[in-house]
Image 1 (cartoon, rainbow, N blue to C red):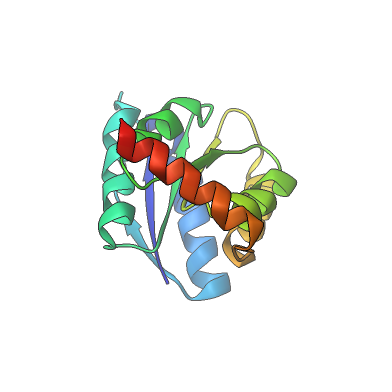
Image 2 (cartoon, one colour):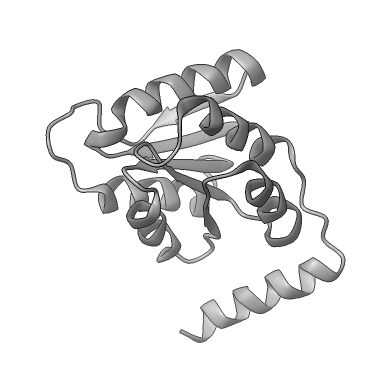
Length: 148
């Protein structure tokens, strides 16, 4: 699996730790779409890049990290085909995959500790979409997106 990862200046260290964690634990390739500098960086840029990479199939899923995870996640959700969950605990990460087939995960480096971030990533990466009644709802979301 290929995971696109993006971040702003606040989350440089989190990106490094999470990228290494995913590579070591799962053997997945991590593609960097974020900044490696702690100088001011506009999070919508990397949010858009990761979302476009997921939507186009260049990567299988995406992970975004900024101060809160909110702004970068909102930016990603503007790209057609993206269902980004902004998450600060493992249970929602798991259910977002089971019920919503989320393809991008976002969290905040100023909101959660790195060990909690790893737990969220674990739950999100290993959980499969249940389809069934949930597929009907995900298809409804896609239809709304097409109407816009």
